[in-house]
Length: 254
Image (cartoon, rainbow, N blue to C red; front, side, top):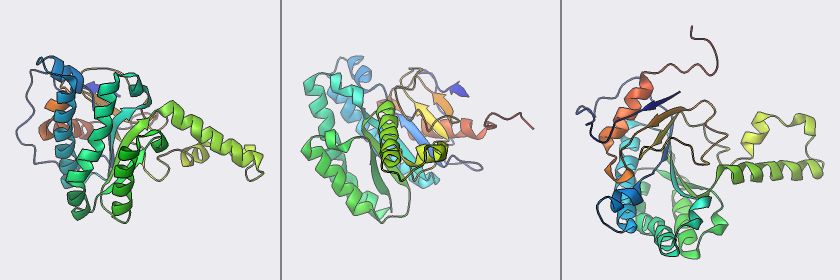
């Protein structure tokens, strides 16, 4: 099921602090609209990306305070390499800047940082920053924050199939034993629950090659609000909408 969230002209509820009842364990977000946010203001696209980092910081804090177990943020896709070189270079510096500033806070708050995607395809300075964050938070037991960097779901599934094929070729796996659990265990998200709620900002109604296997029964929530304008109040609005739904997983409503 999917649902529209707030339009650009609408305001979220004021009582953002009261969230009780059933909450999603895992929230995934397609953080879209940074470039358009800047262009509408006559600004370079990189200004929008930097403004979007402020939103990342606020939503991570809010998710932790609410009690979300896993937060997955779509930061850079395998298709994003097609953007202008200057924009790509800027985007590759953002994780380094963010983690340099915020890693102490993440450690203090028991947050574990993970990365989904082909990290070997990242520039060295980006890779070193994310590896340091993963290493220094590896033993934290609180909320997991996944940054999807150089991530594409088709590539992830292809990688999983290749791993399984290698096990079969080596005689360690009988093809008859390949099932959904075996495939899921070969994905980047092997140790994580599937997303319960997927949020996409900026008004686009598509998944953009994000967690295609994992979102089979995920609730979808779209908003026209661009990512730099997405607030904690908007986040709470999405969570409240999730709480109002009945998840049937293909079954008939009782």
